[in-house]
Length: 99
Image (cartoon, rainbow, N blue to C red; front, top):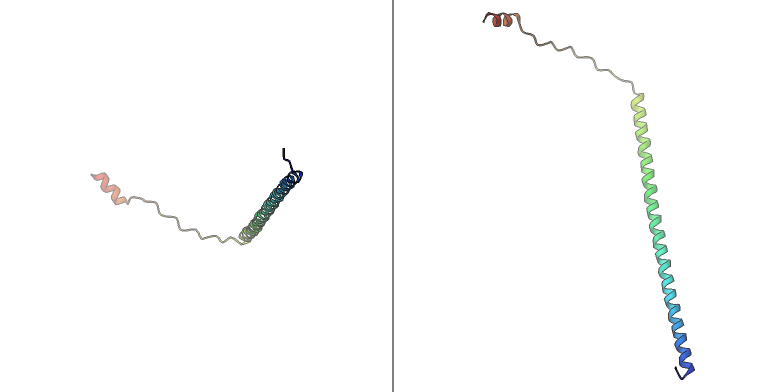
């Protein structure tokens, strides 16, 4: 048991100050982590909103292109003349029969 009450009081005071300093440091770390998390959340939200806006513009452009393509009159290509069927000439048939 310590013989000097002043030494005991100083030791208790020093320990209390150490605990208070550690608590303040821990609280600062918690606040810093919360700020970092909020900043990251804000960054991700901005990226998501930018992507959604870009997707909306692309969808509107695609929809407009489809509507324009649908509204445009169709131009039919003239049909090509039918290809003649491969047929054997009469002379070729007669020649093959004669053999």
